[in-house]
Amino acid sequence: MAKQRIDRRALLRGLAGSTVAVGAASLTGALPASAAGGRGRLIPQGHMGIQLYSVRDKISQFGFAYVFDELSRIGYREVEFAGYTQGNVGAITPQQIRRLLDDNGLKAVGSHRGLGDFRTNLEQELDIAETLGMPTLGTAEAPTGNRTIDGYKAAAAEFNAWGAAAAARGIKLYQHNHTIEFSFATDRPDVRLYDLFLELTDPRYVYLEMDILWAYGGARKYPGFRPVDYVNAHPERYPMFHVKDGVPLPDPQQGNSYLDVEFGAGVIPFTEFFGELKHRGRFEYLWEQDSAPNAQPNPPGSLGAAERSYRRMRNLRGTR
Image (tube, rainbow, N blue to C red):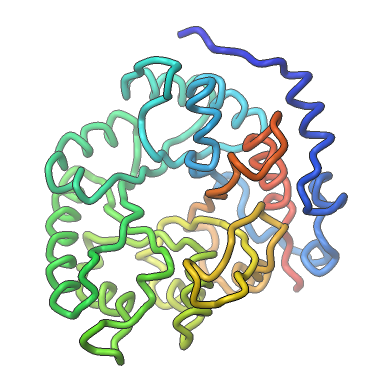
């Protein structure tokens, strides 16, 4: 399958000359002294990946072949899918995507699909996951829009059934949070919905992918918890993280409470979070920036954000 190419020199010139407001140290992959002065690497080598939604514009423009080649060059070894199409580049099959992954030394670790896909095409979704070699398959949708106790009971029953079907084929089903999941039941304001979902879903069949930024958004908007405590209490239920940085919105109640930015350009205390995290080697750490296609000089655009964020994740050190 022929790759579509862009001028690599132009791409690298754009990367070197980027004016993203993360500071000169960030552009070289360096970190502030508070993060870089520690002894141990906080994100284990071999566990660093990317949610492909972050570079969706490049996939649509140039296709999986080009993007996988660039991600491999940067150093990523794991990808999480957000769809299996590549815009106007042309149709591509899961078998062709798998060959491109293998050719570039990349591993598919998961995929975000819709609840409707699970309700109507679960076996087909599991077929694709098997073809791509994924150990996990998930959704970025809230379990349900019905934020009552009964609504979450019904949603948990669905997830348990889907998870059992996935487990029968050796795949873990997971749900990815936004901020709203940390709100309280509309009919029981003393019950946090995230806690309820954890309680009602079977740990053998249903897993969670913590989006760290949106979890901190939940703690800001609906206070009373620390994100890392969930993971340390249930490490076996968290196969992956979205490593997403952000800055607080002026109104804590607005949206997800934070605006996402490049890794290292925000205020999320990753040194603290990962430093307190137990069993660090059991998780996958996936960089994501929803706004990457629109927030960077182009070229290099979202791939520039991917490269800078990879360097900073790789260099993140503990303080003791």
